[in-house]
Length: 121
Image 1 (spheres, rainbow, N blue to C red):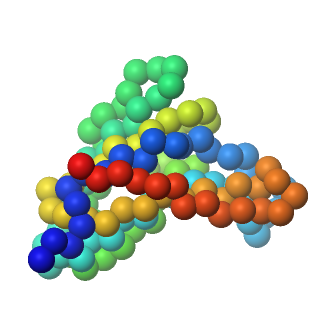
Image 2: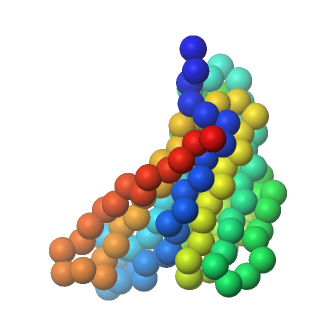
């Protein structure tokens, strides 16, 4: 039974400002779930609009575990800080995983949380 996909692309990254409410800081998040009984070894690439990509960021996600990467904080083993501006995230895994991408945007009067469509290939 297929429990996810090996490769995911989230093309619409653009970190929102934190805003003024400490209870609801604007951010984006990448959540990855490993439904398998073996660890998933992830490689994450960040593709930018105006600079060279950052490739080969690594993270091990335990068997039957979930991890949420807050993208306004340093990510992966390399503690890479994604800068503000347009970017895309590409996730590769050695076992199938499920991934989703969300954004808490506080730029509007009414806050909104978006789930950004990911594409597996």
